Image (cartoon, rainbow, N blue to C red; front, side, top):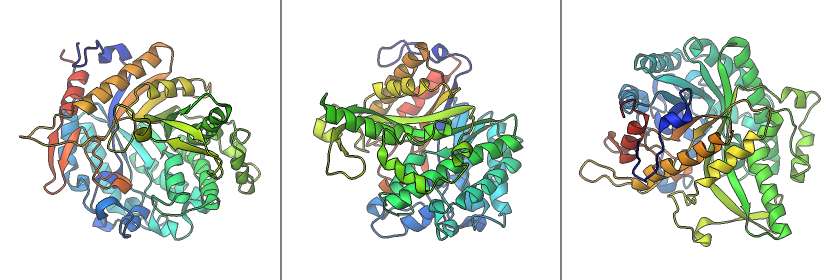
Length: 454
């Protein structure tokens, strides 16, 4: 099979058991924000605050997936995509975060899962993709240690209701992002700031990740259980010792802080001294309970970052040298450099952890300024982005990396958090006024790539 970019890449090179899929998140696609008994999440509240989201966008309707999932699942089937990753809205099942169950929410996800299976699509469930119930945030959210019990209750509810059909589970999505952006920088929900909030959330989320894994294992002993981490390839701006040291600190924060305690290695405090602040939150027995033997680890990689030493930056002593300032050849709508070798380096890095059994790329993709012309979206940049990153994944696999799957972010254009609807990541274009779907050229290429008819 010859691709448009001249390579000889084909899916058979990855092996018959390699998992191909596409990823989404409940808040970003579902809409129906208060339908059928759903309670408010922290993102419902955050998006209602003036100035938090670009252009004042909100996700009250989003992609209307809640009402139109039949159409989108059938599009997945049409595109030959065998696996679909989606998340469960916590406040749709438990409007108050704990206690009373909303049966309409249970029924919705049962119907969604049943329709997927009817269409021959395997469900991959993410339990937590950032949408904490607002009622729990009023009690401190992830800064309250009780959140470990709240999350365990939610996890058990999902396992008991959907585990007879869902065989693949992910506990958390990108904990470094939702704790860093939501509890340190305040640019994501719930908008909290400061090291104290961040350190509490960091430890409690990591504890909850392991607790969620154990809960799933107890209820579903035969399930495949994983959790996902955002990862960024970090390089120093120069070979000066101070820049190399700064890059190591940033790499520790972004790529090691959350995964190493899960693997039983504890927090990497020696390489990032600010993590010593966690000691005030670590109780006896925590470091034993914080580890869990996951069946797979999901990695989500989009780009690289170049780092320079900066003594003016508190806690980390480093700053990013932006892609614009470096004048790289291609930048996405998110202002991220297009640098395919990043995913290769990340796979090689995480492959060194003996405790990781399998790696699945659970998100990879790009946002570009797509234009619908005469019923088509000719997104050649996205198509090439996916092709080039798949080449790097294959290179790592051929060199022994234990990578077993690749999921594109995302199925459709959607609500991209603080970016609103400006950043389009989808294989399918969405007109947010009419909800009209149009498969982009990247989606058509991926469909051909996955087709058994060559």
